[in-house]
Length: 122
Image 1 (tube, rainbow, N blue to C red):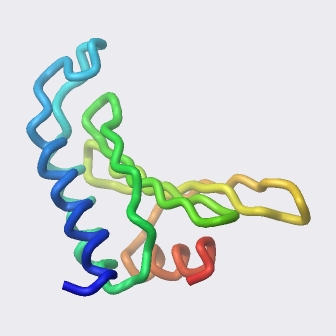
Image 2: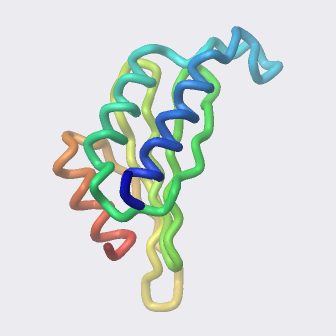
């Protein structure tokens, strides 16, 4: 396993653990993560495993989704895998000494890879 695959394996392991969360895992009656959110997140990770990415923070989201948050030295990009399997991407970019936020739907994995390379500068 090379260094680029290590972050992906660790992330897949985290997704697997989060997939076992019970109903009311957050104390606010949130349902478990949906299989659609988990499947889309898993596909994203395995499809981008070849990129030299920092290990993301893997966070369950109330309602059955999951977030992967990648932080670079000057920027951050977050992929939210929604309960229905769709994906929203958002983040923060440094712009002329200030931060600029962005948010968009992710139409496909090629777009995600291009966005990751652009935002994190890899």
